[in-house]
Image (cartoon, rainbow, N blue to C red; front, side, top):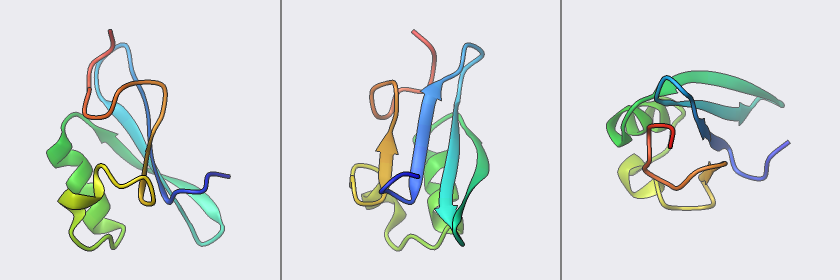
Length: 74
């Protein structure tokens, strides 16, 4: 279990990053984001107010195994 509700997982080989949310006692995959805009849409759907500001807020988003805002595999 993570301490942040939104996790942006490592970039996939084909591009994009899986996004999951922890709610209702379990982890739920929201989808694959290919841009900051996609991630904002996921955050808004998860009920995060001011979702654009939440992208760099470690209380809301944990970027795993890759730099924040990078959407393609190295």
